[in-house]
Length: 565
Image 1 (cartoon, helix red, strand yellow):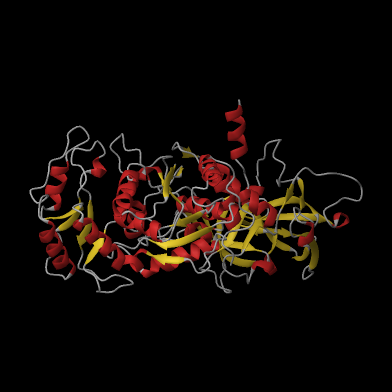
Image 2 (cartoon, rainbow, N blue to C red):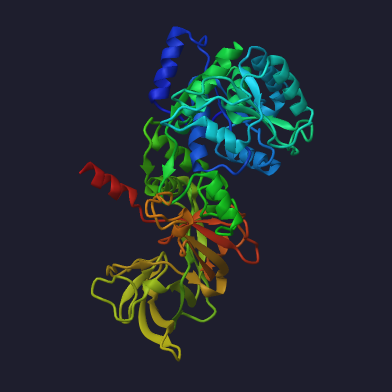
């Protein structure tokens, strides 16, 4: 696989302006080397997709390179499951890294040597304060911190203690290694940050080789340096960390990339925090990381989103410095736009009502030719069977219909798509008064859905031949949260208080045409007049299962028009 998707382009933004200037001045000899550096402590979400598209896209636009690097410095929270899922997601989005896959754990030996170097030049010390005491000594945004009583240990003592930490002679939390910078700095991050801690836990790659692990801020900048990254792109929450990024590399006297920050993606009606997503999974609010209601890439893949639609979404929202909330409707618009062009059409009935055409010959079966996709002339056609008894959508019938209801009603005529005109003559109800069946007649002179005498009908509805119908389960998804910003807790609420109890509706007895009876999981299509659907991982030949990916209705264009006004 090539480094990036050939169809994706980042476009112009403040980051490309910086890169252009760097290339003009020869800052990195015209090189552009980026990286996507996830921590393998959870599944990737749509916010990571934005970073993936940006980093791999820049490499493609500037004929550079983009590494995939796992910043795996916390053995307690990391797992090979997450490593595998991240690789799958990046590949699925259409990006690749050739042989440039790296792990921060590959550099543990070098990171230890760099920490020793800082100790030797008097820029790091072993602190024996507890974690709580370190927080107290750090001060606040308004008050400076104060020196640890262990800050002035001799270089020899620090080297000896640090080696004992490495050799496992102390327990978790007994000591940490801190950078010696400035306890009165206005930037709290620069107040002697911890760069190593004791963690007696097995690492998913190095096993029990180490019992001390470097902190993320210390590891990240050195990993960038070792890989000769030119532009280290991260989200705005790391803006204050840039000072530490630069300090570590300058103090060590090594190659220094340039850190650039952009606004992370905030998407309406969802959360983008791995910690919160883990809660949703572990507390059973969703069925797993790939639940189609989740904003994870695996969840969106299972729901039926295409890689192109996510790339298009990331291209639309662009790259900015200021944070903002992106309307979920824009993501749905991108999904719908791509599926409309590329999804074959089929008929499905998700709220079935039985119809008997009384004057149609019993036992007779006809076939009608349907377009597979009117947006794609090369998609071809298919034959769909028609018989005396069929299912229609319950919403396509109204017993006491108003004048402007143009679908089926008693005494009214409608077109069965590509088939015949039919007129409802009677309604069959059960003991509770519920309509269970319609009796109709058809006009044999309207074969193909057109009248030879020139009369027109305003309504066209879809249908499924009962004799040929494939029973299926359909899962209808809605927003997981009822509040656009679930993290807004000004009212004292927790984000889980806004879980939408109607985010999933399961309809166990729906029907689709026979062509959908044996499709593979992941197959995407449009159920005509209903929406876009995807065959779920739970699908079997005996009982297909379809997830609703998106409705047919597009709300984003309406939103755009309002914004223009």
